[in-house]
Image 1 (tube, rainbow, N blue to C red):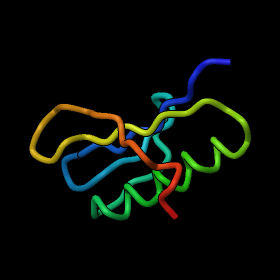
Image 2 (cartoon, rainbow, N blue to C red):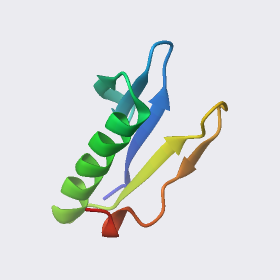
Image 3 (cartoon, one colour):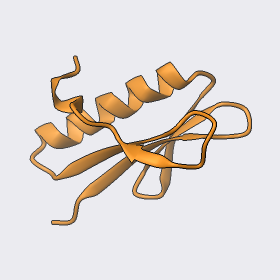
Image 4 (tube, rainbow, N blue to C red):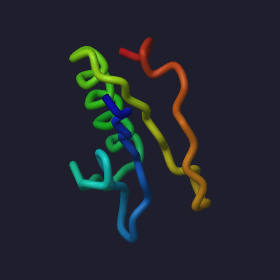
Length: 73
């Protein structure tokens, strides 16, 4: 099975959560989008799939992996 990618990305008016290039949700605040991304990533992980969580760096176009999401509650 291929790795599933969940990404938290900046948009014009807020933040978007994507799963494998499909939009999952729109949020006004980064913290809300990150929370939704973490929940989705953990749900996928607990189902036995290989998953990564990427987050866009504030003020940049760079997207980096979020480490340690397995231990975030």
